[in-house]
Image 1 (cartoon, protein in one colour):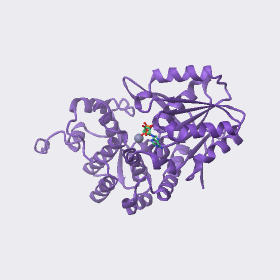
Image 2 (spheres, rainbow, N blue to C red):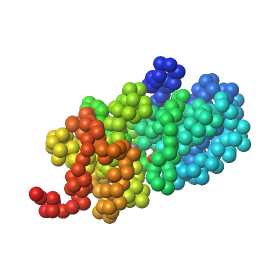
Image 3 (spheres, rainbow, N blue to C red):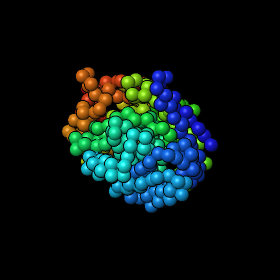
Image 4 (tube, rainbow, N blue to C red):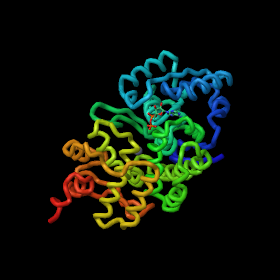
Length: 369
Ligand code: ADP
Ligand code: ZN
């Protein structure tokens, strides 16, 4: 079993443990009944995950003597908005939630963000346990305390920092995950490796042929390394004022592709294309060598992820989405670029023409001179 400690704040200790182990999902009821037994518990999950894992968790928690209510919302990004938030507020108030109650997020990134947002806001904040069941949520969104919901103006525009009090990661939960969702999450694994750790990147390169959801032992190892890297970044920069920005590698282009394309692309696909394009930008700016640029693209392709933007892209919508990026400030949009595999160059301004060129939005001819 692997325990990773996320150490935060000397003043008011909000440190927590991330436990990663195949089969841990079956033990969570006992662990929670021991550590949180007297608290009223609300499990927030979605319509798919409840069938696979929610019902079993509910009955085991009840059998362990916990007072628990399961609330499920329709699967999918559409649940990450204010109608669902209001529905959940009503349910938890009717269920008698108090300041010492516990919210358990059981599901993918959508559920982690949504249930986390409820936990951050209801009664000015109650405790949160994250049980991520998609690779994306296990490797990225369940650790670090970013919670939030979407607004018609854009994804994740409303939110808070609300750290969990524990995270339980079961690599066996990936066995039921649709393969497409597994690939989607693997984009974030590649991101963490490319942004932070060259040996880890070399390791996933070597194992490229063995990457799939059924490979529980390999996935457990990958999760241990990736989560430890993410935890160390979060410890140093909880509120994303500096270092944590490197985790946005691929996301400036990726988010703009998602929002300008009406969210037809999955997040991981958009981030994969974003990393490939941002590697080309890094190369054009003389930051990144040709061979590292090629390695990143090859790794994404080996994980069955796209590396070129869809042809249908609307240039105007895309370029205005870039300008509206959450990371923009008075001086414009700043990119996280790459210096080499494992090392980022954050905060680099990129000329609009270079974005168009590396996105293939203008023909090669017209960019001469
Ligand atoms: P993400 O984690 O990529 O943000 P979601 O939370 O929307 O995305 O989860 C993606 C899809 O996978 C949803 O339809 C969800 O119900 C489903 N899902 C989540 N975890 C599992 C699992 N372990 N097994 C099967 N399906 C799952
Ligand atoms: Zn992401």
